[in-house]
Image (cartoon, rainbow, N blue to C red; front, top):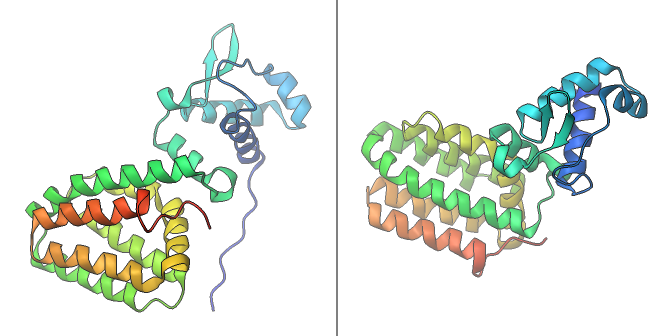
Length: 235
C-alpha cells in the first residue's frame, strides 16, 4: 500500500483560492473594486508580499484586472480567462459541479472528440491502436468506480496524444479532475460494465478506422449523458 505525500498550501495559495471562490460564487461581482493591498493584508492577516503575489496570479488567470493608479477590479473571467482559469473553475468548491457546468463539460468533450477523430485516423499507427486496446482491457479489469474512471481517462488522454496535436492533450488533461468525478458517478449509477462497453465500442470503430461510425457513436453516448437515458447531473 502506498501513501501520498502531504503538503500544506502556502498563504498565497489560500489567498488566491479565497478570492477565486468569492468571484465564482458571485460574492464579488464583475467590476467590484478590491481594497488596496495594505488593507487586504490587514484584513486577511497576511503580508503585503502574499497579497501582491496573489493578485498577480489572479490577474494572470483573468479573475482580476490591475489598473495603474486606479486599483484592482474583478474582471470578466469568461472573457479574459485562459487554461489556468478553466482549471480553477474545475477545482472550485472541491470539484462539486452544477448542472450547467456538467452539461458544458460534456458538450466541450463531444466537440473535442469529433476534432480528434479525423486526426487519429490520419496519424494512428497499428501500434497506437494496439496500445489503446490494452487500455480498454484495463478498464474492463477495474475493481472500483474510481479505478475504472481513472483508466477511462488514460484511454481518452492517449487518444489525444495520438492525434499529434500538441495542444489537445493539454485541454484533455485540464478536464481530468471533473471528468473522473463524472465517470465515477456514471459507474455508480449504471455500472463499470456500461463505461467499459461505451469505450469498447469507440475502440472497435477506431480499430476498423470507420470515421462515420466513430462520429455517430460519439454523438450517441455523449448525447445520452447530456440529455438522454444516461444522464449524470445528480447523484
